[in-house]
Image (cartoon, rainbow, N blue to C red; front, side):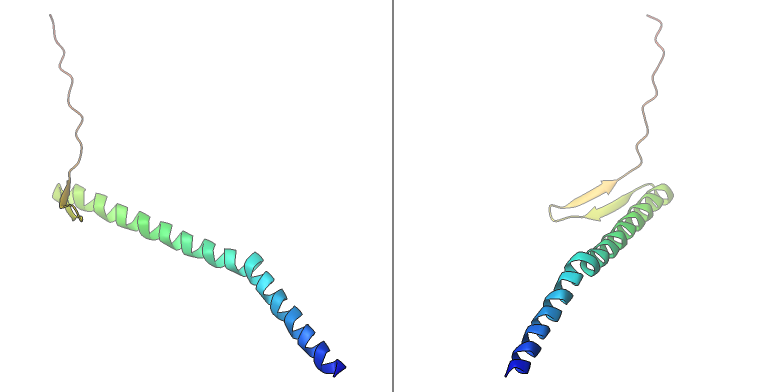
Length: 83
């Protein structure tokens, strides 16, 4: 009977130790990896959009509200006035 209680308590301690190990070490590592991959994917999508705008002159993005057209911005030239 005493050995059975000891085995159950040992099992609970091991299980809690594994849960703590996951929460403190493994979980944040996995989360960091996922976030880094999401950032890389976001950067890739943005660079493809910019490259397409540069090649074609515009990009049409479909949104829930309608369409969005992206074009390169050209800063207006300031004219020198002699007034």
